[in-house]
Each structure stands twice: as C-alpha cells, then as structure tokens.
Length: 195
Figure 1 (cartoon, rainbow, N blue to C red):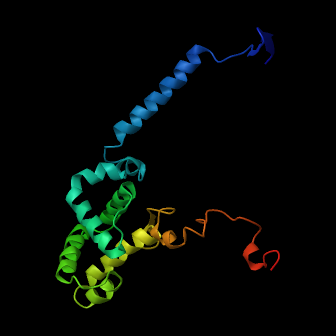
Figure 2 (figure 1 turned 60 degrees about the vertical axis):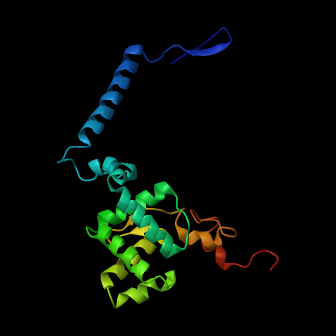
Figure 3 (figure 1 turned 30 degrees about the vertical axis):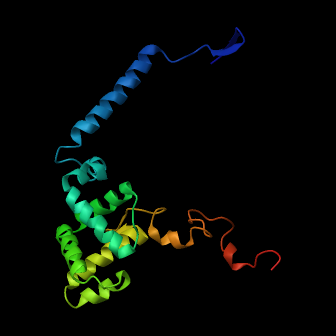
C-alpha cells in the first residue's frame, strides 16, 4: 500500500471499492432484518429472543395497573416518593417473571398495608410473617431487588441494577460506587500517608 500526497492531503492509493462497501452494508442490513424478524418467533436459541423480549417497555404496557401497584408498594416499603421509571419497569418485569403469583402478591400486600396502616415499613416482614408467609417472602424479594439490584436465587440470580441500587444512597456523599480496584491489591490494609 503506497500513499501519495495530492493537494496537501494524504490519500491512499488503495481504497475500498464501492461494491465492497455496498456488500458489507447490505449484509449488515440483512442481519439486522433477520434478527428483528426472528425475535418474535418461537423455537429460537435460548436467550436470542430474550434479548428483544426483555426490554421493560415492551412488557410494561400490558400491565400498567400491575406496575402502578408495584410502585405504590415499593414507595411504602422503601419510604421513597419516586423511582427511576426505566429501573422501576426493569425491576417489575423481572420480579413478575420470577414468580407467576407476583402480581397477586403485590395486590394482596397493598391491601394488607392499607388494613394495617400503622405498621412501619421496616417491620412489615415481621408483622406479616405469621399471617401470610408467602407475602413476607415477596416483601423480601421487592426489597432485595431495589436495594441490592438482584432478583432470584442462586444459581438463577439476575442483576437488575448496580449503580442505581438503593444500597448506595445513604453513603453517596462520601463513597464512590466501587467499580474497579483503585490501587494495588489490599491497598486498604495499609495506613494512609501522614497517619
């Protein structure tokens, strides 16, 4: 490959031919078309259709009332007045997929909370355990999803949030969300300089 200087600009003597560019663009377009066409069909390899079907927006429209009930429950349990809508939909859809009775449990929990209005949010699980243990488990699932960003049990745990998990809120003014090692291994075991 040789380069030639023409009009003050560097030009390559060998450049991709338009036919090759058209072929590559056509192949990419065909692959995208095939992926979107096949996403709705059954019998696809595991996980293929899930990539397209797992978007919260696609599933949230069919269950708006269920989502609203879930957000109302989440607000009562966490004491927060609002949530990130995209994260809320992701948490709701993932929890609903993890249990076929999740929607019924949310409605039952909201009813229980209305009838037991004086129960503080941090003691709901203990208060409901003796009456309806399956609802107590749902409270734990909802809290785990919001605070830890996890849904499900090992080995089928799904991560629905990391940096927006509520566990980081109390310390966000003094602690950076850990995402990588900031120094050499075990740097935290040594005394800081000047100490």
